[in-house]
Amino acid sequence: MPITRRLLGSSILAAPFVKGALAQERTITVAAYSGVFEENYMPAVIEPFLKSHPGIKINYFGMPNSAQMLGTLRAQRANPQIDVMLFDLTFAKAATDEKLLEPLARDALPIFADLDQQRAFQPGVAGAAVTFDHLALTYSPERITPAPTSWMELWKPEHKGKVAVTGVPDLGGISIVLLANKMEGETDYMKSFDKGIASLAKLAPNVLSFEPKPDSYTFIVNGTSSLGYGWNARAQLFAKNFPGKIGAVVPKEGSVAIMNMISIVRGSKQQDAAKQFLSYALGTEAQSAFTERMFYGPTNAKVQVSDAAKARIATQEQMATWLPVNWLDVAKIRDRINDAWRRRVLTAAG
Image (cartoon, rainbow, N blue to C red; front, top):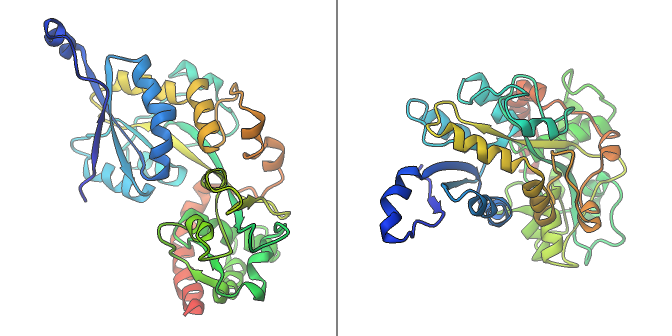
């Protein structure tokens, strides 16, 4: 599938200096999510980087999901055209295993010392975590009052046909299976996730759509649905942009945390420029700006954010009480969860 290319950075130079300047110019390609992520990452991170690094230009490749990003890396294995990739942990692990990413030691870049040393580096995964996020229960403040406090709100019979969520294989769908599994009494999802699948099959009659387009957040904002679940960062952005139309909470049963990794593609022809961008994206300026703008949790331990932003992201203390999910382990059972979802949950949904 062709990918839209967007070239950033000024190429307008005074005529006497054009030849020399072009000789020194470097262009890197950064691949990350399209849509609302791109709309916010560009002004928060990409554009400030370009201003502070006038000798580097950026092609931004926006793609809808991590699966397409991994597929693109595989297709370009012989001749990589992407220099920096930003995608979710499980796909970064697959890309690392397939030797599609450049391994970087913890002391490879000075900025690595500033990151959350407990979570930013994952065994067997090239690169470092660039954002933290978590699953949130989303709802319409106009139709659901008071705000829900439990994930079990989704299962209440009065919400039949009013729930819009993205199902498996999306990580949000897998997350709710794991949470439901725990709420049903199974603490080891690697041993069994059957109780979680059975619980989601019971939820199916309440679900208006497991594939809301463009997304479940929009369904709540425009009144198509009343409840759902989604990633906190996006939900909080919608809540900020549409006051009173959508809310996002972490229920009393807790949540599930995820992360996006940022990595250098193996075979990149602009390794030095790619490392400069990686360092900037993980630095306090970029991390703070993106947290303030889109409410992803920062991975740089030195970042300071406003009280308003803090109120929309999870604290370390909160996350310590949540279901501990090892996404690298979950990747090993992902196909089995997908199969069980198709056979049991989608069948129940009719």
